Amino acid sequence: MKTITTLLMTSILAAGMAQADGHLPLKTLPDDGDRDYWLPEQVNAEGTLDALQAVVGAEAEPFKGTLENPLQIALIYPSADTSDFWARNYLALTKRLDELGIAYETTEFASRQIEHSLQATYASQVDQDADLYDFVIFGPSELATQADNIDKLAANPDITTFVWAFHTPLQYLENQPANWFDFSSAAGALIICDYMVERLGNDVTYAMNRGIPGITDNQRSGDWAACVEEKGNWELAYEHYGEYTREGGFEGTSLILQAYPEATVIHNANTAMSMGSVEAQLAVDKAGDVFSTGWGGTGLELDAIRRGELDATPMRMGDDVGAATAEAIKYHLEERAEELPFVFLGRIQIAHDQMSAEELDALQTEAFRFSGVGALER
Image (cartoon, rainbow, N blue to C red; front, side):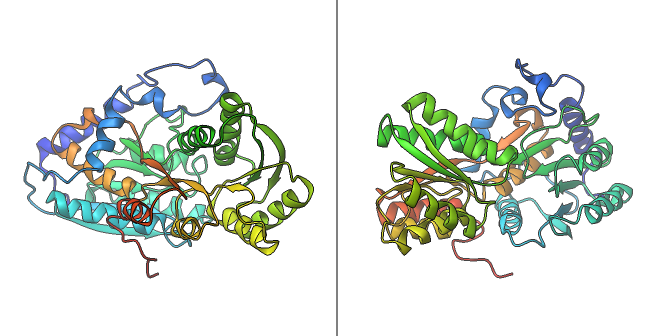
């Protein structure tokens, strides 16, 4: 049963239409014709992202209005996969809603990452039953594959649609969702680049364990490499495609240590490869001989930093996506949706081996302040 009053629903619909009324992007770039998506900086009004990041990192300010009944929220996402991103951000969403004093009920439509057709079926079901829901949170199995379903849900005047885990609004959508929520690999690449050039200086020879060719690795590895080469005159010795696996990180690092001893830095594009890289260094008693990075700031990476086996990682404040979505719901209900960034990006900070144990613990506590520091029970 729909729970939002007519006034509030009118406000939500108006906000959603304002995002998709043909006025995007707010800023054009020379390469717009070479991409089928917009970058966050093209679609966010100035100051809105920083403002929401600050809100998400601060104590909750309760919802100022009233609801006749709990909100009805549908979640369509690949939460049946091994990644805990979805479960953690579900916890962050619901706990932040509790802090905000917003009553809600959720209905989850779970799938695996590869079950594209099942997700499409769920999207059609929620679209047809839109009178039952106020908000739908859609975590696409793959962005282009689910584009028609995003468009369909966003076009439905009876629900407000949010997208999780992507931050590249597709240019060709006729109907844009109200907001997008994600972390930016490109932003993380620049943050870790700046840290490493400042710490290690210029004219460094490096190697990379890359993931799988595509937009994520282009940002995590490619953007990072371009940055260190431009800002520090670093030189690439070798790059290995490890397919985001522990085995790939082990094999790549073993080869680098043997064939490219001039490389004093090994940059890894995800947690699995960074753990494989650490294992390869330990196997030949060379841990500490090279500067090694991870990606994401997972518990495994932080433990490796604490043991002195990993040097630095761009650490996502993992619960930010769910918490920001809860805040966005509040903003929509309070008729303040125009204050939101169209694309929210969670905060990324550098965790490194020169931090004290207390500093690392505090960073981890902040990142998982809603979902908990320990491993989730599945």
